[in-house]
Length: 177
Image (cartoon, rainbow, N blue to C red; front, side, top):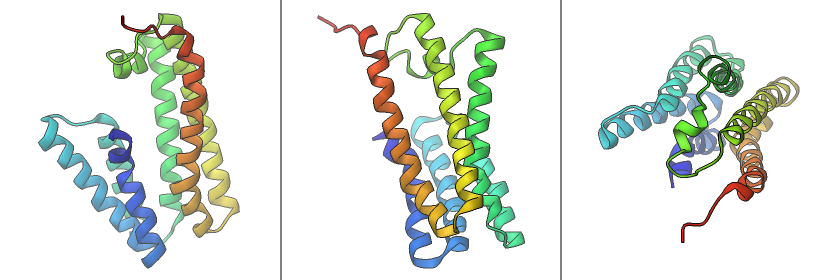
């Protein structure tokens, strides 16, 4: 359910794009990202740092898209987010020796420390791949194709990645008896 909640602004972006075009979709993305952060704050009495970072980048790059009437700004947003997350994962592994993935998922999954480290690196590589793929699609395909890639392709690739990752961590998961 959390994944659908996190995907909601992107889904709205895709639907609005289909009916009204990229500029209305960008405006809706700014609005739904803001509503999502406010709703999270009201519901959980805290901010989700990932949602706040995403919202800030949507404001900046989405705002630039609307002000300058240039779709490339909003097309860069996924790549900027992916690179930022990759840098956070790599930086935490190098400088703090604490796995951000363990911090996020450690209450749900128990894994050995070396596996958390490998997962952080695998996720960082995946984010870099997605950033580069997004830029390639943004610069080599139409805006329509890019929107479909963002809404459907990125989600599909992430699901495939998560399934592959589950096979990697499965041997380390122990059943509670």
